[in-house]
Length: 432
Image 1 (spheres, one colour):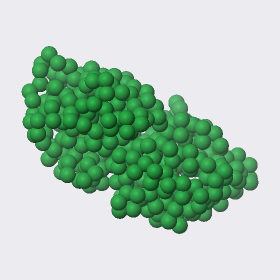
Image 2 (cartoon, helix red, strand yellow):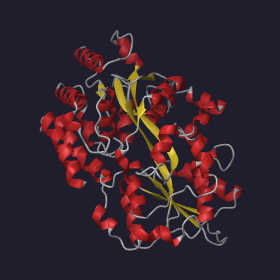
Image 3 (cartoon, helix red, strand yellow):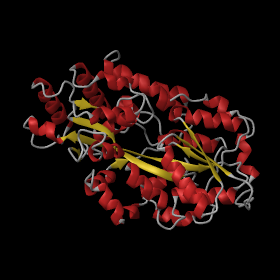
C-alpha cells in the first residue's frame, strides 16, 4: 500500500496541535445544521450507505458518507487533513492508527460518555489493541476483528484418500505433494501472499506464530533473524514455491479478496486467509464451487497460534461536532441502537468477526454462522490468536509495506532465508 512519507506527515502544519482545539475532556454541543463527514475504504459501500441512512432516520443524524478505494485510502485521508479538510469519523487500519494518533489527526475517546461501558464489553485482546502505545488511552472503536485460519477443500482430500486435514505443516506439505503427484491438483496450496497490507505480512506473522516464533521483542523491535521458527516457516514457503505446490499468480494479486476468489474454483486443497473469506467460499453457491460447506476450517497447523488484528473507527481531533460524531461512532463501533445493529449486520452480511463476545450469544448470529463455519471451532481458534503491539509504532506502516518485497524475494529464491530475515531486521532499524 502506498503511503505518504511519514516525515512529511509528521511535519504537517497544525496536525500536532489538533487535539487542543477541543480542550482537554471537553464535549462541545453539536450544531444541528452541521453534517457529520464520514469516510471509509471501499468494502460493501451499499451496505454502509444503508446503515448510514438508518442512523440518519432513527437517530436524527446528518451523516454524509464518502467511500475511498482501499489502495489509496490512508494517504488520501492524510492529504485531505493537510489541506485543512475535516472528516469527522474515519475508518483506520491498525498499521496507520497510532501514527494518526501521534500526529494529532485523531483524538482519544476515554473522556466521552459511555466509553467505560464499552471497554468492559470488549474482548481483552481487542481492548489492548484499542489502547495507545503507552496504554494510557483508547484511540479507536472496533470496526471488526480478524484472524488467519486454515481452510481445506474436503471433496479434494476425500478424492485423494486423505481422511483428515493436516494438523502439522509437514502433513500439509505431504498432502500437497501427493495431490500434485496424483494429478488431482496442479497447485494444491493457496497461501495469501498478495501485495496488500492484508496479505503477505499477516500470513508471515501467522506462520511464524504457529512455529512459536516472536517476530518482535518486548520493545517492538524486529528479531526475525534470531528466531529459528521464522527460518523454518520461510524455508517451507521457499520449498513449496520451488516444488510448484503454489500458484505463482498469488504473488501478483493486489488484495486478499482476489486471492480467496481463486479458492472458489475448487482447484486447490488448502488455503490460508482471513476467517471471513470462508463465508463466500463455503456459504455462497452463487460464487463458489465449494459451497455449501465443501470448504471447511481446521485449526491452524503447528501450535495453532495465528495472527489476530482489529480495524478501527476513529474521530477527527478537529471535529467541530464532537457530540454528534461520537454518537455516530458509538452507533458504528458500540451499541448505540441497543441491538449491536452495525456489528450484527457485518456478521450476517460479510462474516466479519466482532470484538464484543456477547455478539456470539445472539441466536441469529449463531444460525447465520452455521451456514459456513463451525462457530465453536472458530471461537477456539480466536483463543489462540496473537495480536502484536508493533503496529502502534510510528514506523510500522512503512515497514509493513516495504517488507513485502523482501519476503517475496525469499519465496522466489532470489534471496536466501538468512539474508532475507536479516534484511527485515535491518529495514525496521532504518525506519525507527
